[in-house]
Length: 345
Ligand code: A3P
Image (cartoon, rainbow, N blue to C red; front, side):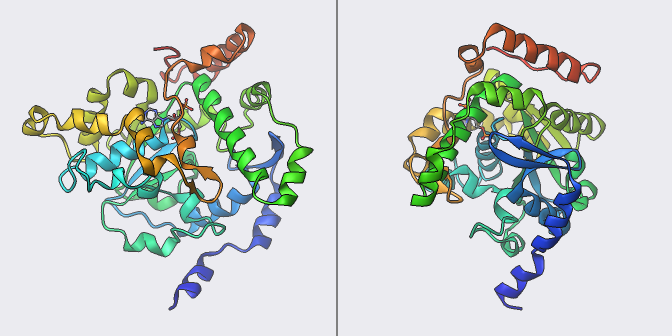
């Protein structure tokens, strides 16, 4: 079977996606349409990818899959996971470490946005079969929508979440940049962009509070993985961005143990943990040439994945009533779950 036959085989027909869309609830997210599928929102172009991913992905028992909502620390976790798993082959700061020559998203593939995205050229699904174990992958899908083989196989999931206010600020800056890029790709889009009002932080805030964000609702997403981590602690590791910032050593040890590669006491005394933390810090990542220019999947500037990387940046962006509203929402949505977020450092 040649490559194009393999690719054809995995494409969910557009007609089928269109028929599905006709039956799904529809909403607007910052000027673009989103559809609610299995309780969560997806952009037009993502829906097909999600179906592809759900139908065709075959998990291996050894897979390590990062779960997250966009802007909650996915890139950071990708670099940490890669560094931990490959630490014997490439010591931190060793000049041949792939993390020094590749953006973290090029080392840990996003399943529905890269692999099962027919609009983008790499990496196509058949490449997944060629990856050696353990495969490092990622997804923004909620726990309930994960392909069956992820749920039933022995693969492990590392979920990261972040307080909603910082996530929202991060989403705002990232999205504005993506929109600017989109409207500058050709003359027609440039003209279109002139009539397109730049969305405000208030627009994003409303969408978030009304549970209308891509891959959201935010709290349902986090609670889904939170409950799974309580029920199956060997299957799902639940990480918080703020805890990683507060005590990266403790969290990195948790991560290494979870993936079955705990740090030895020799490694600890050799400072291996500290070297990984340093190599994957936002300061180091930002300074790498490979992360400074170029794009991922045509639209996403590599450097836009590394902005401030702080806890509490939201304090510069929201009015007291907005903060109150979010806190109230957080209390309501998390009541009785045992999940909580730290808002400031
Ligand atoms: P800010 O926009 O608040 O700075 P994601 O990877 O899920 O898209 O999340 C992006 C957010 O994580 C951005 O947050 C980005 O700056 C931050 N980030 C990326 N790499 C990081 C790192 N190594 N350490 C801490 N934060 C990081």
